Image (cartoon, rainbow, N blue to C red; front, side):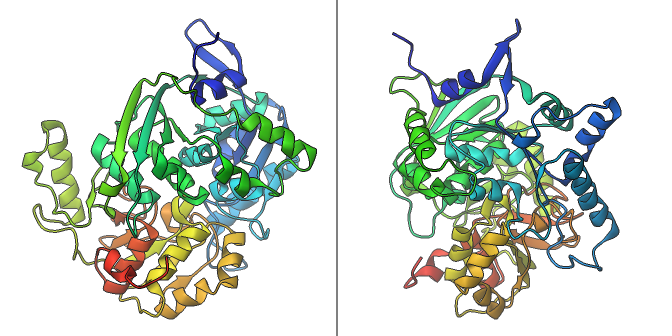
Length: 468
């Protein structure tokens, strides 16, 4: 009899080539995703005269520097250089490239699942911290640094210390207007940005099982903001239905064989976890960040915290955050005026996210300017088929092309210094959306509510009587 195993155990052992005396494992990599920022790794290979070990397993994507407006002659010279460098590296190593004008172009963590490159049981690496997104499909997925990217390119393997296993149960039913973004910000606020440090988080429970694949990806995407090395959700019928007939997914008899293997990729009933957390979905309200860390989050109905009431280790950071954000302790977060809004990113730029925002915006006008950037060209096309783009533009928001856009501010899309942005992105660090930018993270529906009121506001009254 073998001991019960967690999903992490099963995925790890199936990819472990060998283990060093210090416990570090050499793991086989099934999918390696690279983007414009991977040029350092390609330069390392070139300096050694090395070639790629398995170029057919590496896929290149234009996303971080992808301009969402001028993509022709008016493109910024630095952005053009970054894109051309990726293009040259992809050509030199015969990589499959999702180029800027490819009808499948988009954010790497959106198009991987969209194309069926993301599959249950795979180990997926990318030089981007939000690679944890792909764990929503029952995959072992985590971000790596430039040196590790070079190692994967050269060997198709990576050295990694196995994290501890953590499970977050979310049971019950989410209320109207509550999304996976709210679940994630809720647990990060409760446990802190170090609450899952050193762990791989597996999400379970009836509320998680009820999520769509878009919602599951949002949840896994934000795992690292709570300190986790990765996030994952066991594959089930929802996963399989989403993957069937994707371009790179198995077809025909291979599909049936894959399903038989994927069905076993669940944690065994009595598998031991190093840490377990339980949340009641019915207690989760629309959640918004107030400071400069994802753990600086609270229900939209709550008041801003008094730093004096916080533990000594967090009080100074809270004071600094309130000062940077120009907010006053004890005041309600609702009613805080915003200067602009942004909907998009690998966290919340999928079709479900755009539909949620459009449900709030339909027939209404935005009081502040804003930008909507779909997660991929295919999401953009789908949204336009459904008329969502017209809802956004009729409301007064700008509808732009796919890319990381205002999430990272590398592509010309930034928030001006001192301006406050209601954003569906993943990080509210100082300067993340531009030097001096003040970012409030929230769900796409909450961003839409901020757009139509000009303030941080509870989306739920705005959804009454509307199909969502």
